[in-house]
Structures are given as structure tokens and as C-alpha cells.
Image (cartoon, rainbow, N blue to C red; front, top):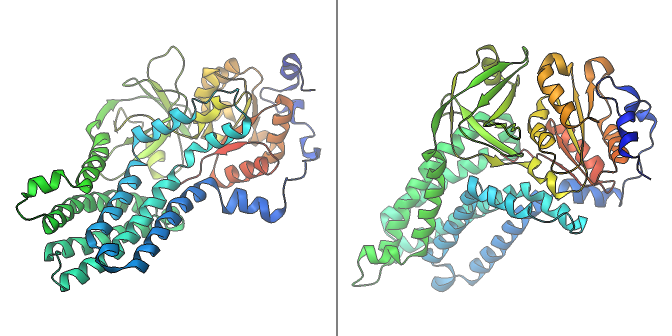
Length: 461
């Protein structure tokens, strides 16, 4: 029998570590489900992100191989190959568009909590749709390789293709290869600033050149007596390129410099307050001092009944350190607030929310919203000194049974065991964690491998 609400309130310490975790290290974790190889393949090697990537990539490669085998003008004509390459690039770009991402989250999270857990668990993985983006991006690049070879062959045979088409094709191919190279997880992690610059500027250049390529390719294949304008509006690739160009431009149409009210919490973090837009639990926004060169994403903290939002900026590099030392009064923002992993919380009936350090930022608005019964577990060094009494007190007020664990006083906990203790005491249906990458992966795997749905960021951008 799960403990009653009154029993939970008396048993769960608010800040001092008390009996809520006393002896948790002696708890016996249940055996992991399934065999060692099966669960590692399911939860680590073939994560849903990679499965989505695989579905898109394998489907494309099946068509790619069939096209190569068939060959000939009908099977591997440059115009046909160009359409497939453009279609993949179109999907890759749209899957990173704010409105598209928000639409996916809205639809997935509309599922009622009365639905079976296995369905809601799958819908809760909506934040892995980046696998479609990367799968389509890599596939589109491979199709462009085949298009380049076929276009070159047809040019040499004087079969439709002209010099400008070939030139633009190879320039775009070089740009896409550069983007794909820097987007590899290891390269992206080691050189993230470079990855962002390459993705942005090479991507913009590639899209501009795709316009040139499409116009010349349509011109090369237009029918006798048909004007270029008529050929363009009847060509599907033209409309795909138009839509994906608009999707890229849209966030920049909402570029603006907004006022900031900084609240320095400590020498480790600052809380920035904004009133230009209202946000919802699970949203994040992008901020910058130099819009063309760098952007930083932060979760929004919205409080019911209050206008605007705030964001906690913790020391994690040069940019954040400078914002703490010299809090800004103005910042650039672009696009619309976009949903992230914490948005999936309302899919479940009872949820343990786990945060470490500044991970409390994305978690806090969910605690304040009280849409579903939640149990907060927050570990941080000297939470009151670091994040301020106002934030800590507001969390305790919203979730009186909150467990706020001072790692400076009690040491770093075994987060898998402590999270599992919270799940059992609260009779939770799922776990949502916001932490650093290694700990997120460890806790998510520790829960999932024991049959408990768990959700955390996947660092795919």
C-alpha cells in the first residue's frame, strides 16, 4: 500500500535530509528487467531517437539502392534524384522549426491520462523527434551525392543538364558535407560553438544556392514552348524550397531586443525576468547579445497569475559567467517559446520531478502549475545560498513535500537509489529529470531498465 498524503508529508524532509532518505543507500534496488544485452540494445544503443533516425535513413537507403540497381534515364534521372534530395532537406529543416516542434508536443501531450501507460510512455518520447531531422539531413546529403554523379554524367552526354546546374550542385554538396561532419555527436560536443556557426551560416548559404540550383534545374527540364515562370510554379521542388525558406526566416522576423530585470541570486547564478511574452511549463527561449554569432537556450519559469517569465542563468562557461558578473538590461530574443522534455509531465498521473543544481529552472514552472500530483527531488549545493530564499520558499509552498537535498551538507547522493526511493514512496507513474548529461543518462536508464518510464534531455542540438 502506498503511504497516505499525510504520512508522506511527515516522512519527507523539506531541506535537511532527514528520514526521507535516511538509509536509502541500504535499499535493495529490484533486478533490471530483460537480459543484459536486450535492455542495453533497447534503452541505450537503439534509443527512440536512433530508431527514428534509422527508420528515415533505412527507408531512404532502400529507395536509393533500388534506384541505383534500376539505373537508366527512368530510374536515375537527375530531375527525379533532385526531387528526393530536396524532399529530405525539406523534412530536415521543418523538424527544427519552432512551430512544428510545438505542434508535435501539443498533439502528443493531448493524450488523456486514462490511456494505457505504454501508449503514454511512447508519446512522452516526443522530444526525440530530432532523429527525424538528422535522418533526413544525412539521407538528403547522400541523395545529393547520387544526384551530383548523375548530373555530371548527363552533362557530359549533353542530356538536359547545363554548367550552372553542375556548379551549384557541387558547391551545395560541399556545404552539406561540412554541416553533417560538424553535426556528428562527438564533434558537436567538442566544438559546439563551431558547430552552431557552421550549421547556421553554411546552412543559410546552402539554402540560397538551392534556390539557384532549383531554378536552373527546372530551366534545364522545361518543356518546349513553356515559359520559365510556368515551369517553376508547376514544379513541386519549388514549393518545398519556398516553404522551408519561410520556416527559416520566420524566427528571425520575431527578432527583437527586450528589456531584462536581473536578480542576482549569488555569485553562481542570476535570475533574469522578462515581460514581453507569457510562457507555459516546458517552454524554453533563446537569448543573445550578438544575434548572428551565438544563441543560448534557457528554460522559462512561469508563475500562474503573473505576467512574463524568468530564467535562471547559472555559471557554466564564459557567456553565463559574464552575465552573472555584469547582469544585462537588454537581450536579443528570437522566435517563439519552444517546448522541451518537461512538457510531457502532464501525460502521467503521478510524477517524480528530479532536478540537480540549476536544473530546477525547467522543473519549477511544472511545480507551480500543479496540473498533476508531483513529488520534487532537488539536489544542489547550499540551495538557499546559491538560488535564494525566494525560489526555495516558493517551491516548498507549491509542493510542501518537496525534498531539497543539500549536497554540500550531505554529500553527493546515489541518484538512482534516491530517485527510486521517491518513486516508491510517492507511488509515481513516471520520472522526469533535468540534470547534466551523464547523470541524466544514468537515472533514465536506471529507471527504464526497472520498468519505470523516465524522461530526460538527450542533447541532440
